Image 1 (tube, rainbow, N blue to C red):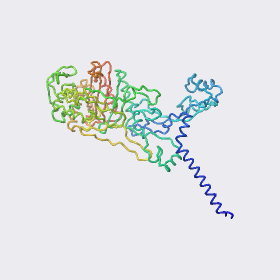
Image 2: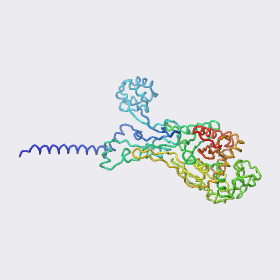
Image 3: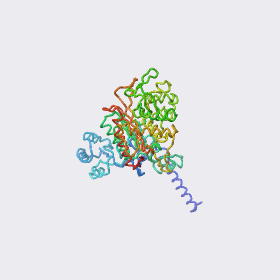
Image 4: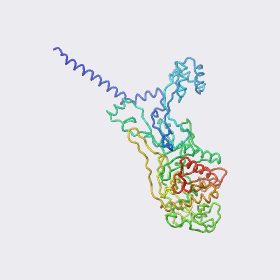
Length: 566
């Protein structure tokens, strides 16, 4: 019986529906199920060394006015490819290209002779202007392909903080700094939109482009102008004193927000070659014995426990013997009956030991533990942070407590000592330092970092009393007050520490210089830490670091229009 018209239409419609379903299923298996295999095959034919950064998130600095400034972003450009099978006159092509971009003649001609290879990459990271000039040559076999790469607009600025993107084996991802710490947030996966859609619907897969992915941009607390000024002062320290390493931190003591962080020697995160010794961030990954800069913490502990007051006196004989070991002032000279204020003014080791003895070793160690100096990390949002080394204090030997009271025998990171000393500017409360202001997610609300207090270490009374003593150090003792600021109270202390030998003992001619201070002392806005390892031509930190410290302080006062407090 003949098929009626409606029945034929139904069969025809069913046929087209089945065909469409078959094509969709085939496309699904090609792009989703077998997509990785096809991508791998394609990758073997053409190099794609930076495919994973084509859509990487941005790391921003934050300006004084609250505006975002790119610290690490993407840049668009072109790669230059030649097809030797189509290249007619390699010498002529070389001469024309070399007039536009730097090329090695010998290398170019060797590549141009590979007539069995249709794809030779000659140059990368070409600007649109260079690409336009090359296109205008109209040489057969000369091709340009668009590319994007990681770009650091500030060059070396904040390099240790930012880190860089590079290879580890076949994995191309963040190395060091924020690039590493926030890899999961910054990293994107280049995926065909239709393939992503099908994968999400049929397999429940999520990708970097999916709606619920936790990817976004990182907005830091780093103020770019402040960062550049800090780094310029570090360069001046290197020029004047040739230290092996120097570094600095500028922090808001009330919150723990870090406005600038830098160290020398450094590197260019966008460069092609690195000295591996310069890549680690010494401010958070290296520990040092800090010396006399620790004494304000010992003083604050004594004041908090009420075993001393600023006017308490002791008999300084220049040397004290503990566990049959002599511990002396830097000059081994006794001052007679002196007050606690003079312990800071003249940086007397015997005075710090006297406070420790009045506290008792175990109570003294508990204060240092609460300041975060005994094996604890600060919790900063950067990778590779080291904890302090204080195994000496576990021995409970009085001599170990004594040396720790003036900063020897325990080793901490520059950030840890900055955070501990900044507690004195924060009414005795220890904060968690941070460099991330906000994570700006692509598909969900942004998350801001909320300042957090780790614990109250000493009372507000003890912290403010110590602050007043440190102000007097600057007003009266540091170069007889010549560096003090007429309208601003600055609380500060220097440190000069002997450097430990690898096999034990200390060098007699190698020192670590440090300088810490905060201001305005009555309502601190900023704390500054500087250090230099093995500077040459000066014995004490007061000579090497006083000038750069006050240069930075004056800059911050002017830049932020800080109100005077006297």
